[in-house]
Length: 241
Image 1: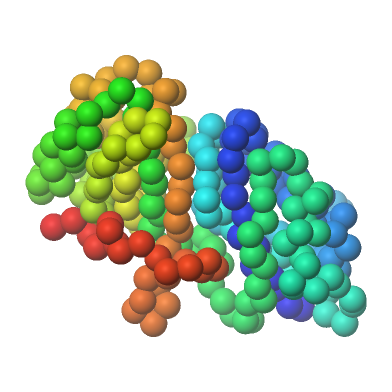
Image 2 (image 1 turned 45 degrees about the vertical axis):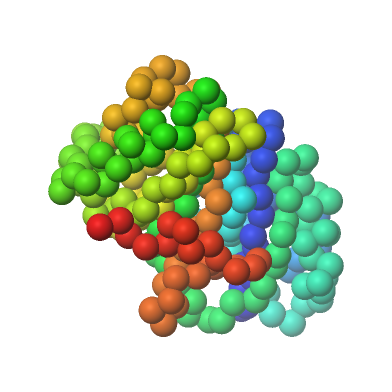
């Protein structure tokens, strides 16, 4: 059995489709593309697709991934044409950017991704004010948060998970870019915003555009993407000290 890794984006109105509904769209696209997908055993077989960290409803992304298991020995579209073949079977707003084979034993996306880079676009906010709020946050030795996971409240310190933060002007408002770790427990973007002491964020956070720009894994001590499309940004790659 072989495995492919797919990188795709999620932009526009499709951001209001849930993670589970997106998974169904991708499963249908894989079937329509004619891939020899492997299926699980049991009473209700399902295509063997493996997803990484879920993207919350309402968020957009430049870097989403899933893996798909294939039955060896059966014909399949070529890798060069597969992104366009898959993309033609997907709704507007989901675009497949790359498909690569991965070696047996490659860690799953759930296990491999150690951090994500997020960009928050805050309308009407001054870059200086958000930069000051970010500086206050990163200066703290501990940032305790109460999170809700599976219906239970848990305590987590955001500080070890918090990377560098950059605030700069953008076309639609101030853009706040932050690196958030995912181990041992990920902190959601809205939970990060709640920890940021900024008056601009005390209102309706629904006005804030949230975009996942990167997911990061470690390979031989190097930080890289599961599928790289170019040179990674180094602006916020280091953990804040």
